[in-house]
Image 1: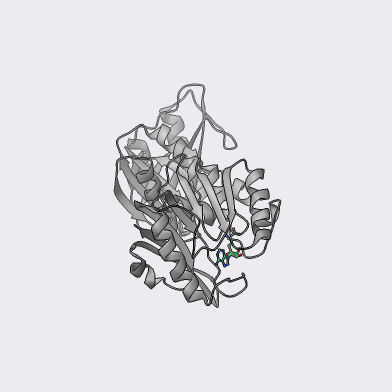
Image 2: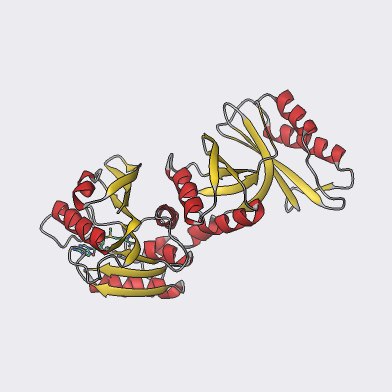
Length: 340
Ligand SMILES: C[S@@+](CC[C@H](N)C(=O)[O-])C[C@H]1O[C@@H](n2cnc3c(N)ncnc32)[C@H](O)[C@@H]1O
């Protein structure tokens, strides 16, 4: 069974890596059938509806998960022929809607295509009715510049929740905190499983840990500033996470060797956030050695920085992923995935 992930366009590589990391974390056997712009198609064996619903509660950078009904070329005649040939079933008395998304926009008229595909579905299912607002069956055609994929929406990611958890809406706010959707995506890159223990040794206001807690992890936050820890506690308590916060130095962690399942962190870059160390370089190197020490073997750390973090190998890590994100003219952020 093919599952199509309609990805957000906010980053080129993170949305795909997030999906694949979640598949591995949940132990779902899969094969990449196709990978295109804002679209990833996976071939899976298990129950696709159940899997889609579980994934939709975890993912941040996906809009929808769609079943694969047909694939075709991008001409209108190709699309309509494929729709006529396909088995698109809507039980009698139930409603359906068709939406078209073009990535990027093409010469096709989306509303015209929606209507014409709707007519084909209705011809095949005369007992059905159209409802565009809240249909029982929501069909979606994704048109990219090389091909089209059509299917039924099995699950949608509630992206509004991330907007509702924006840093300034939380009980404690401090500038420089990364957005919740980015925090959630990088937590997912660590392939965590429910009840895993996650550490953020530069936790600040606890934004990353809030997202980890929301997908069932137990979390530990460390920061050198008491005032930040107080704020992190206010935020973590507000979202019901199982948490511990400790005042300490990321270069000398009060944590046992090989004891945490994942580390996700956004250390200071030496621009605005407080740096308690001789230099930013010594802070990163000291913290990397400590993160390596406390992490369990075979598990992942994700570290954000404004440089490529090439010293991670000296601490013992293998770099398994690197995602560059241009924040503004003078800041490119790197999300680096490290495996112990
Ligand atoms: C960029 S902020 C983290 C932002 C965080 N992701 C959030 O959601 O608010 C970096 C944090 O590192 C802390 N910090 C600086 N030096 C440290 C050190 N040596 N050990 C631990 N924390 C340190 C700062 O107090 C600051 O809160």
